[in-house]
Length: 422
Figure 1 (cartoon, one colour):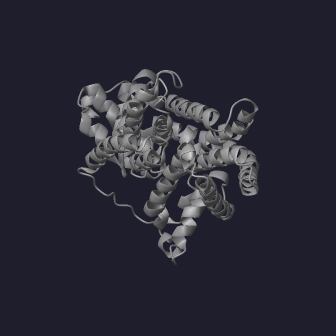
Figure 2 (cartoon, one colour; figure 1 turned 90 degrees about the vertical axis):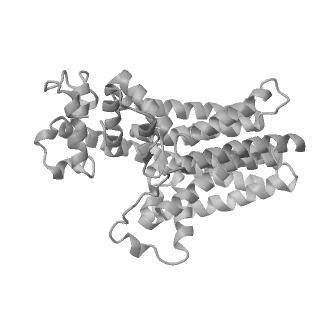
Figure 3 (tube, one colour; figure 1 turned 120 degrees about the vertical axis):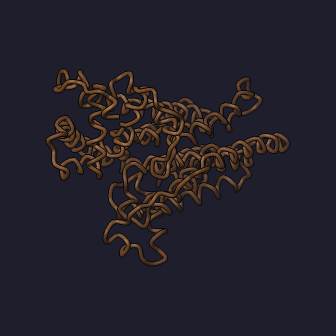
């Protein structure tokens, strides 16, 4: 069932069917993001499935699975194999945590899963030793992955500065670092310039009363720490405390990793942490004025989870390799937080899933009878009811989404001429 910003995608199916779809339609901003790759995927899946949004949900799960496999391969190589892989089990539960239920239940938000997956792939390929047979192909693969991340969301652009830093601290020879760093920087700069050519900063209305809550110099740090801890908590107070603890553990991990001059060995996990840090910082800048509740929005927890995964991998390696008291305490503290939070994350996520199922079923019944619905009801589907009134006929003509022949039987009304509804 199309819901919320998915109605901004609905019109593309009409343009695709009528042959009027062009690059500009795919490249145009959606809020502050350019989501070319997600649009292409959604249109392709839509043609195959009559825009059944469940197919998009499965695609998000498949992307998370790819990210998990890459994390497993890197964990096995950097942290340890055999019985040591038991330490990887919490990572699997984190990657598929129901704390990010909103991303799992709304197809449009696959843009975040695409950024996550291609960021993990880019950092993985940059971490592959060039001496290996696959090493010569790793850098081009990293460039492609970073590009695909950039074409998925504005957050994907941050792969470039993080990847450059990863190259700098990595184990490669100095001459190789300079050579690869120049190529990486030139391509990354070109993509940043192309991305922001013709870019418009979206106007965002601040909700009534939100501005009053944004007060004091400590508000923004509180927002950032809350968003950082939101990966392991659904509630503001605990999320803030967990975020503060995670920040302390990050500092401890970096100090321990640099103490023996072996930060290069941890460059992959450090890249995950830095990438998550920068994304959450950008979210703080862009969303903090709308109220502290924005720090707990489910769709953004995917990035804070990635930061926890990076921290977990670094501390697990330090715990096994270094064996110092500080490393042991830090790893134990993080492991305890993860293990205690996961049952709550999954139980709360199940409730969110049930509520979402009910709301989508209600929304489907409303859209299926959109012509007789008042604006007040359609506004609950999308804030501007006229958008639904203009684009629902397109879906009806195509037989897509709630009008699909596979949903509640055949369409209840005859197809209209697309020229009148596109």
